[in-house]
Image 1 (cartoon, helix red, strand yellow):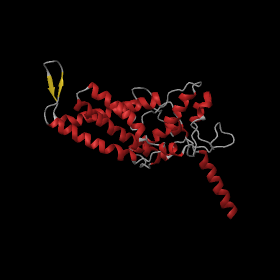
Image 2 (spheres, helix red, strand yellow):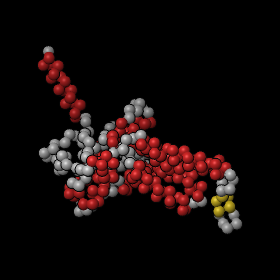
Image 3 (spheres, helix red, strand yellow):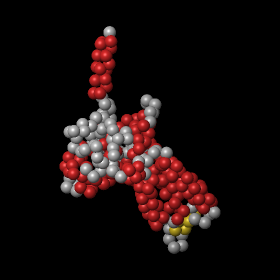
Image 4 (cartoon, one colour):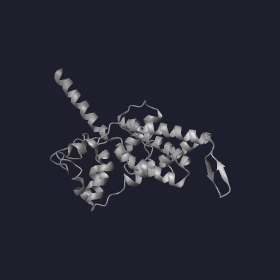
Length: 274
C-alpha cells in the first residue's frame, strides 16, 4: 500500500513538472557559474545571451560580489508607495490650490490666453496617466527588449542589469520593482521635459498624473508575479497575459499595467490557451 502511494505521488509530481515553465539550474552545465556574481559574466555569452536569458529559472540571482551593491540592487515592493505617494499627494494638492487662484493661463498668441480652471486638474492628471502608459510601453519594448549586439559586452551587461535578470528569474520578489534611485532618474527627466514645454502648473499637473501611473504600474507588476487574482477577473487575465510574455511570447505583450498600446503597435499576444 505504501509503495503504491509513493509511486502515485511520484507520478503526480512528474505530471506537475511537465507544466512547470521554470527550470532548475544545472550548476555544472549552465553557461555561467551561478556560484559567482552573474552581472560580469553575462556579457561573455555574446550570441548565446538572448536565448539563455529567456530560459527562466526558479532561483534567486546574485548580481554583485560586493554585499552593499547587492543589497542596493534589491527593493521591497512597499518602498515604491512609501517614497512616491507622498510626492503624488503633495503635488496634487499644490497644483489644485494653484489653479484655484485663477491666475494660470495657457498662451495661444501674444494677445490671447486661455484661463485654466481648477476643475481641469483631474483631466490633466488623467492625461499624465495616459502619457505614462505610452512611456511604459516604449521603455518595455524598445529599451528593455532591445536586441543586444552580440559583440558588445557592456550593452549586454547593462541589459541584464536593467531587465534581463528579471526574465531569467521572474519570481525573485526582491527585484520586481524599480529601486527609487534608478526610478528617480526617469522621473526627474520626465519632470524637466514637461516643465520646460508647458507652463509650470500645467506641466506639474500632467507630471503628477504620470507619476501616479508609474506607481500603479510597479504595484501591478509585482502583483502579476506574486498576487492571486480571482479567476475570471480583469486582473487574472492581465496576469495571465504578462506571464505569457515571460514564458511564451517575449517579443510581444509589452503592456504591463494594461494591454492598451499593444493593439495599435500590433504586439498583442495571440488569444490562445496558456
